Amino acid sequence: MTTTSGTVTRSVFRAEGFSCPSCVTAIEKQVGRLKGVQEVSVKFASGRVEVDHLPDVTTTDEIVNAIGRAGYKAALSAF
Image 1 (tube, rainbow, N blue to C red):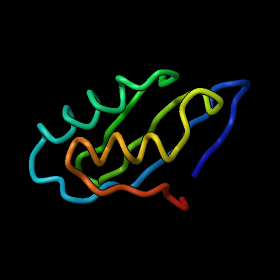
Image 2 (image 1 turned 135 degrees about the vertical axis):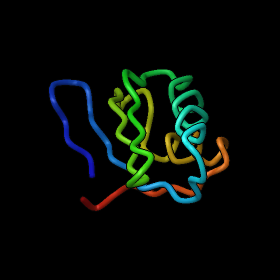
Image 3 (image 1 turned 120 degrees about the vertical axis):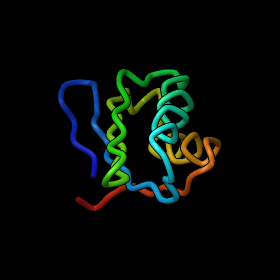
Image 4 (image 1 turned 45 degrees about the vertical axis):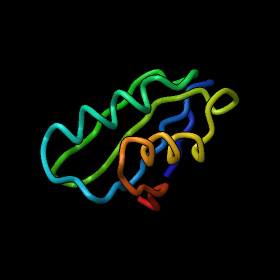
Protein backbone atom coordinates (compact mmCIF):
# COMPACT_ATOMS: atom_id res chain seq x y z
CA MET A 1 0.00 0.00 0.00
CA THR A 2 1.28 3.43 -0.89
CA THR A 3 -0.27 6.76 0.10
CA THR A 4 1.03 10.18 -0.83
CA SER A 5 0.95 13.35 1.25
CA GLY A 6 2.58 16.24 -0.57
CA THR A 7 5.90 14.92 -1.83
CA VAL A 8 6.38 12.30 0.92
CA THR A 9 4.89 8.86 0.33
CA ARG A 10 4.12 6.25 2.99
CA SER A 11 4.56 2.73 1.68
CA VAL A 12 3.65 -0.33 3.71
CA PHE A 13 5.43 -3.65 3.27
CA ARG A 14 5.03 -7.12 4.76
CA ALA A 15 8.28 -8.81 5.77
CA GLU A 16 8.82 -12.47 6.62
CA GLY A 17 11.38 -14.26 8.74
CA PHE A 18 11.40 -12.23 11.94
CA SER A 19 12.72 -14.29 14.83
CA CYS A 20 13.64 -11.66 17.43
CA PRO A 21 13.27 -7.94 18.15
CA SER A 22 16.81 -7.28 16.88
CA CYS A 23 15.43 -8.04 13.39
CA VAL A 24 13.61 -4.72 13.68
CA THR A 25 16.88 -2.85 14.13
CA ALA A 26 18.52 -4.60 11.17
CA ILE A 27 15.68 -3.59 8.83
CA GLU A 28 15.48 -0.04 10.17
CA LYS A 29 19.23 0.45 9.62
CA GLN A 30 19.25 -0.91 6.06
CA VAL A 31 16.16 0.98 4.91
CA GLY A 32 17.11 4.12 6.83
CA ARG A 33 20.38 4.36 4.86
CA LEU A 34 18.53 4.88 1.59
CA LYS A 35 18.48 8.41 0.20
CA GLY A 36 15.00 9.87 0.33
CA VAL A 37 13.82 7.78 3.29
CA GLN A 38 12.37 10.03 5.97
CA GLU A 39 11.20 7.48 8.54
CA VAL A 40 11.08 3.70 9.02
CA SER A 41 8.79 1.92 11.46
CA VAL A 42 8.91 -1.87 11.84
CA LYS A 43 6.16 -3.71 13.73
CA PHE A 44 7.72 -6.92 15.06
CA ALA A 45 4.46 -8.75 15.88
CA SER A 46 2.83 -8.22 12.48
CA GLY A 47 5.87 -8.07 10.20
CA ARG A 48 4.65 -4.71 8.93
CA VAL A 49 7.24 -2.19 7.71
CA GLU A 50 6.06 1.40 7.18
CA VAL A 51 8.38 3.71 5.26
CA ASP A 52 7.95 7.43 4.63
CA HIS A 53 10.02 8.28 1.56
CA LEU A 54 10.37 10.55 -1.43
CA PRO A 55 9.18 8.37 -4.33
CA ASP A 56 11.20 10.27 -6.92
CA VAL A 57 14.37 9.50 -4.92
CA THR A 58 13.69 6.03 -3.47
CA THR A 59 11.38 3.49 -5.12
CA THR A 60 9.44 0.74 -3.41
CA ASP A 61 11.64 -1.81 -5.22
CA GLU A 62 14.73 -0.24 -3.65
CA ILE A 63 13.10 -0.51 -0.22
CA VAL A 64 12.24 -4.20 -0.81
CA ASN A 65 15.88 -4.78 -1.84
CA ALA A 66 17.14 -3.04 1.33
CA ILE A 67 14.92 -5.26 3.47
CA GLY A 68 16.37 -8.22 1.56
CA ARG A 69 19.92 -7.05 2.35
CA ALA A 70 18.92 -7.14 6.03
CA GLY A 71 18.07 -10.82 5.50
CA TYR A 72 14.29 -10.77 5.16
CA LYS A 73 11.84 -11.32 2.34
CA ALA A 74 9.40 -8.44 1.80
CA ALA A 75 6.71 -7.25 -0.56
CA LEU A 76 4.59 -4.14 -0.92
CA SER A 77 1.43 -4.71 1.11
CA ALA A 78 -2.04 -4.56 -0.42
CA PHE A 79 -3.43 -3.24 2.90
